[in-house]
Length: 243
Image (tube, rainbow, N blue to C red; front, side, top):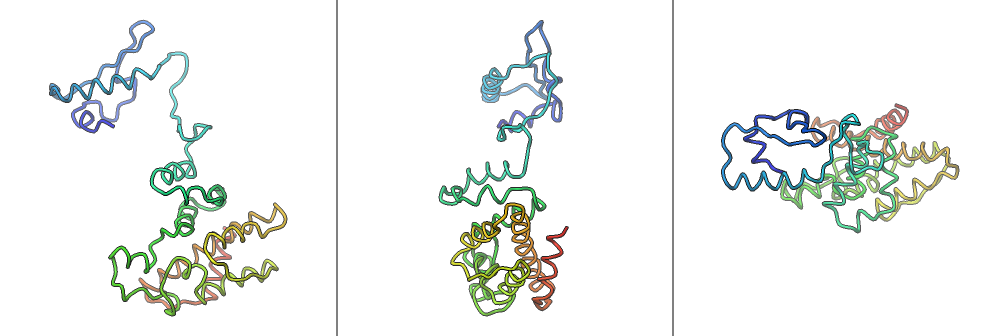
């Protein structure tokens, strides 16, 4: 909040105990500077002191770090992403019913985060990179099968290669399926397809595993010029789900 004061402080990296002293039962803040502060910097210091007046220190409890965005006070990827998405994403996205389902800790945080970007269609597919002016508008064909523009929906659901991966999972799970209209609908239908609660984790982990395996295969195709193999993606997805 006060980068200018931080830049002239000699207490960088210090703990709170180094930034003041006890005067009886009252804590007095005492900062140290590498030079005399300018008048406008003193105004910043006054603002800092006003904020610190709301902080009540005590000698009766041990210092500990609290993540204020979670009722338990413990940091988690889920709470961090929720704070960030509420700050930068429109309400129509943050109000999606699947929001809380993604952050269950069943898979590594980076896979959860990536899947979230896929579901809100913020992942850098060729179509999105073209819209942002990063790649040529003529270079938007799907990296897996080159039959349609590489949108998020096409790459992760609609592509003929990808759909065979979903179909392999559905066969293994003993279910049948029809092509959904959107990624959001696909995820919500997939998560609620398990009739018994004990099987829902398997279905949810499977969804993450397929999304992750498809993305890795897509990148392998683009950056290493390896041909897409349906069996390879299927095997990877089942392997990821068992880790």
